[in-house]
Length: 532
Image 1 (cartoon, rainbow, N blue to C red):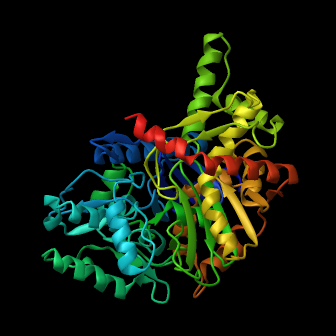
Image 2 (image 1 turned 120 degrees about the horizontal axis):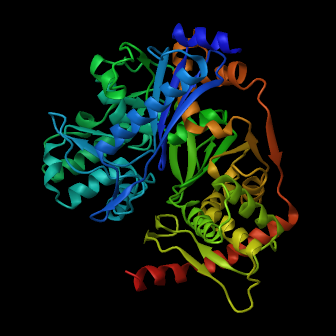
Image 3 (image 1 turned 30 degrees about the vertical axis):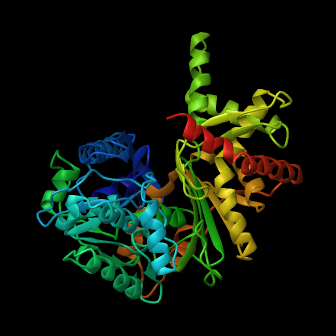
């Protein structure tokens, strides 16, 4: 589309907007009728560790959203000379899971507890046993039950339990609803009904009765919707909340809010069976759409759904690139001290590419990237570590390769379980900051997954583009058209991608690294105990 066509599209409101609240950045992507991104905005933010809890304040949520939307509007004005007053459809997404509890008057009862917290081990273990279904520590229901077990005073006053995406959607539309993919990170979903599992709801309500709690789980959970359904419209109050300037008009249709896992699936066209995607940034998770259920319960594997309710095996690690980014930042400080001016993107590219010249196994060195705990390796806290022996080949290429491998170590432990289950995978697509330097992250991931890894040209748009596509699907789908059909025919028909197959030396090297990684987990545990 040329500039004039895009301008007319914006003025006539034939656009779709997606906004995703990620761990370190809030991003907005405005797309045209052909689903191509035409403008964007962003806001950098960071979680806080307060009173033993990883959190974001509600003030930070709204200041971040407003700044992101303002940045988008500025981009539209500068590129096309038009003021953004209306939008065809909007979708909101955010990091999944966590705990946001409100009373009957909408008062926030306790600070937002994010997915990053590993403080619900007792509850997660008990619920997994009761349901015979894996309940990870970061799930909303684990946070709720832990609060009950802790005898927290606010529990009796809960009237509404939601996630970050659900909260934003509620405040902008007045609707307490969310997409099935996001809901599947709150409480188990029955994929035959695309709603919360009735049997498990009953089992949890029995636990509530035993604690003499008056409300039931159905009273406080949001309504579950699937992709393509309407989830309300932007209210006058909501429009001013998003755009305090008052320029944005109310009445815009909103699609069901989704989690970052679901938007990652959409952005990589990985919503059909035998497809998968891996998102690697602050955290790392692989999502594989299953043909059939796994043979048994695995505490390392989360069972969630696509935005249309298909069962998905999810391997999630809390830690991926944060420690690696910190090391790159340290090298950046060194270059500044030398008086050398180098952009952050060039610094990352240079250091990442050095890993390709390293020994296949990383030179016999070891690193743990644990800023926070990891349930897969049974650690409630993290201590980033770099370890070597006197015999290790301590070079910069090996150092970088070791840290790139470390970013994928926990993920690999979970993915090996799916390999044992003989889960079929025709396509694995990567997205996220880990893949920004061409060829490097892909090659490391291919070695870790022992499978070809593809990266699409649009992968950099990420989840914000994914939720924009879901908003467009809701507004434009034809009759009974499925999400899979819509994406294949109207979005990805001419999509270009690059694919890297695993290299035999990389496979052997990563396997040797993983032997050290698993054998050395006791060092990480000792560090947690020894460094308080």
